[in-house]
Amino acid sequence: MIEVNNESAIDVDEAVLLRLTTHNLAQLNVSSDAEVAILLVDEGAMESLHVQWMDEPGPTDVLSFPMDELRPGTIDRPTPPGTLGDIVLCPQVAETQAAAAGHTLLDELVMLTTHGLLHLLGFDHAEPQEEREMFALQRDLIVSFAMEERRRRS
Image (cartoon, rainbow, N blue to C red; front, side, top):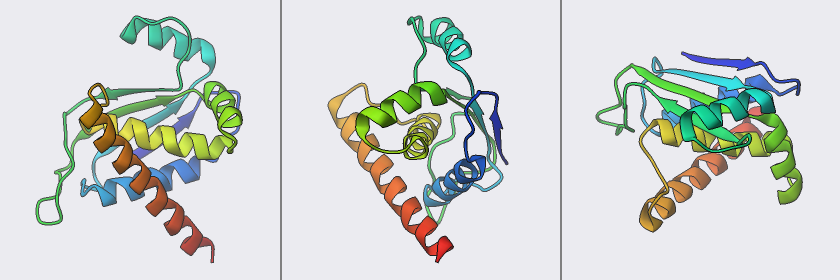
C-alpha cells in the first residue's frame, strides 16, 4: 500500500507520485503489498526533521526513514510484503532545485521520490561505487517511468 499525503502549501499531482512508486516497486521486484508513505511538507517541518534526524541545519529536499530493511527482489524471488518506510519531500526546496536545473517541479519530485525509495531499499551514495550504482538505477527507473507515462497518455 502506498500512501501520499500532501501537507505542504504547494499543489502537487499526488497521482503521479503514486503511479511512480507503484512502477518503481514493480521494477525492483518488491511486493505490491509493501507499505510506503510519501509525505510532502513545508520548509519549516522539513527543517525540523533535518535537524532532528540528520543534525544538519535548514530544510532539505528529501529524507527517507526505512523501517523493515527490505531490499530489491528478483523476478524469481520478489521482496515479500512489509513496511518499507517513509519518504518525506519538501516541494519548496524541490521547486528551487527544479528552476536551477531547468525542469519542472514534478520532474524534480519524480527524481526525489525515486531517490528516497532507493534509500528505503538500502541503496546509498556515500562511496563512489555506491553512488554510481544508485544513480544509474535511479536514472533507469525514471526513464522507464517516463516511457510508461507516455504509453498511458497515448
